Length: 136
Image 1 (tube, helix red, strand yellow):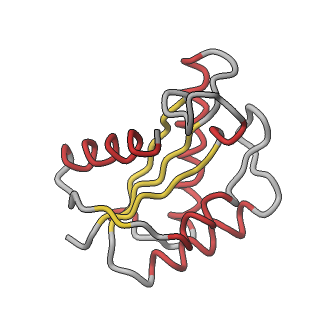
Image 2 (image 1 turned 90 degrees about the vertical axis):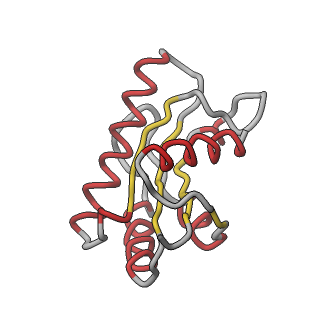
């Protein structure tokens, strides 16, 4: 399913004219896992803001484009889950913008519940992911 999310990112970036080659960044993956929210809320768990600060610092030191997505589990209503992840992505965007990230190089999106990590939904589906695109 991770390929599906990456494919979606490639399609979205293609539509808005950004580079299409992605690269894996384990450091950003680890930081993204630290961004967590209270269950079904727009409230960060402890440690999330520190992770966002580190991500901003890291992004500002590199010349790449990024796509940051929020996903959730299939628990609850599909439309509510989509709105929840859109709200979470927007929260991350506003914080990163306030911390000085160049928003022209970072796109944000809420993916709802439609991109689980496996065929068996779990709490791991509630996540933030960062896709890195080659320099333009």
